[in-house]
Image (cartoon, rainbow, N blue to C red):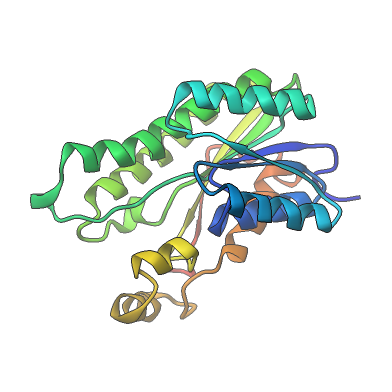
Amino acid sequence: MTKLDGKIAVVTGASKGIGASIAKHLAAEGAGVVVNYASSQEAANRVVDEIVSNGGKAIALQANVAKKAEIEHLFAQTQQTFGRLDILVNNAGIYEFSPLENITEEHFHKQFDLNVLGLILASQQAIKHFGSTGGSIINISSLVSTFTPANASIYSATKAAVDAITKSLAKELGPRQIRVNSINPGMVETEGTHTAGITEGEGRQQIEAQTPLGRIGQPQDIAPAVVFLASADSAWITGETLYIAGGLR
C-alpha cells in the first residue's frame, strides 16, 4: 500500500520543474493529481501522460492562480472530476531580480500577485473542498526568504510573506485538522533557471562553494519532502518551514 492511496492533490504550476516532479512523486504514492498550468498545456500534458503511463491518475487543468475566477474554476473542476480534495501544493511562482533603482509597480505586483495573493486564493478555495478529516497545504517557499541575496528584495519579500502566511494559517486552520507547512528550496536546476541563466557560470559556482553538500539541487531533491508532508507520516507537523538547500543558510 502506498502512502497516498485514495488521496487527491492539486499542484499549482506543475507543468515543469519542481512542480512536475512533485506531481509525479505524489502520483507514484497513489494520489490522483491535478497538474495545474498557466500557459504550457503541452508540457502539462507530458506530465500527465508520464503519470498515466506509470499507472497513476492525473489530469491537466489550466488556471492563472493570481485570478480568483480561474482558481474557483480549477477547484470546481477538481471536485467534479475526483469528488474530493486532500492535498494542495502551492508551487506556482515567479522570480525577477532587480536593483532598487529599477523596481517598478509592475515588478512588485507581478511577483506579489502570483507568489502571495495566488497562494492565498488557492488555499481559500482548497479549504472549501477538504473533507471532515482535514487536509494538507504545502507551500513552496524559498531559501531567499532568509538568505536574501542582493537585487532580490521583492522576490525575497514574497517568500518571507509565504513563510509568515504558513505559520499563521497553521494556527488558524489547525482546529479543522488542516495542516500547513512550507518547503524552502535553495537553488534548484530547472528549465526556468536555465532560461534565466541562473544555474550557469559564476553565480552557480559561488552558491556551490557556500553549500556544505557542494552542489545545487534537482527537482527530485524537493518532491519526496512534499510526499512526506502530504502523508500521515507528518500527521503531527504543522506550521513548520523545511529548508532543503544542501545546508546553505
